[in-house]
Length: 436
Image (cartoon, rainbow, N blue to C red; front, side, top):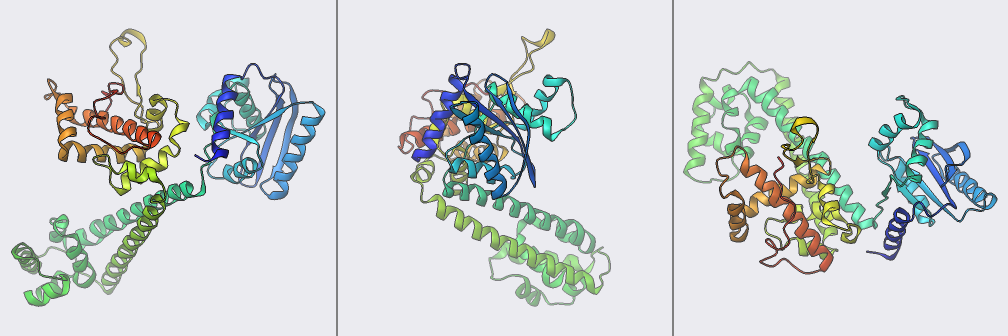
């Protein structure tokens, strides 16, 4: 953790602890917009200083904000300033980085808190930029805010690359779905029934000879050379023979010239997207390699390069979490239950799913691998299932518990700087997770 980040984290914790003791702090609430921002300035004692300050989302606008802040600090004889922002899309990031880079204290307020506090302040439900800046300032003055996580540029690059990879994977899935559901299911339905057996050959068939009539007009050897890059044995031969035979009696629709053009275009786009994903992953793992924590995470069973990158990006600096409860809330693996009325005592807690979905997914996949291939995790998983084997969905629930345990282990390794060793799995158990 660099010194600036550590100092900001230390200040934030002190701010939360000494909230009521400090009365000489200027609170600035900023409602974020794409072109303009609205600010509300008040003191810690809720005395309004400036109700409406509008400044442009530009260097000149940011300078006007700082000029007003410095003027009021001097006029009101205030010692410190805290600026709260609303995380609207990505529009808050330039302002936050500008302020943090100049030594100002920045916090953020969640949109959910703003929405709930809107009705508490004056009983209204409508959205109003001017009033919402006062809403943000009110929440900051009461400590209902969060630490603004602005890590070093490499960690931000890792998060950006993971986000880019996610978008490309969605694009890949859309292309595959369009090829199968729009082209293959319409013009060669028999091919779709065995799609997952060898997807590369299926894509070659779609690209070069989607028409069953064209396949039937080729000899088996010519068809095999066209769609298969190499010979892989008897199973490949039998599969291509089956496709060649069913092509003669296919129920597919007749094709015009546009179908072959669309098929070639979609397959080429899919291949291009997959090449881009490979390039993104190469760049991602290269940057991750500059962190010693990345190598430590890969010593955990089930943690490969991708899972380790997701965990590293989510946790960032391990010291910013004071306990495991904060960590589990980050992933949405914390337990909650609706305890109200007659069923309050019998309510079964489930995971909140309020945190990072990508982190939960990566941890669950790691738990599946570890509980299936690693002796220590297999034995631990078996103990969790003992006596409950017949419960519906129990294996999924217990893998969720294992994934929560793995997250705590990863956090521990990042804090201590030591690799994983046998025995960490059963030491210091986390909260019993029955969540689904």
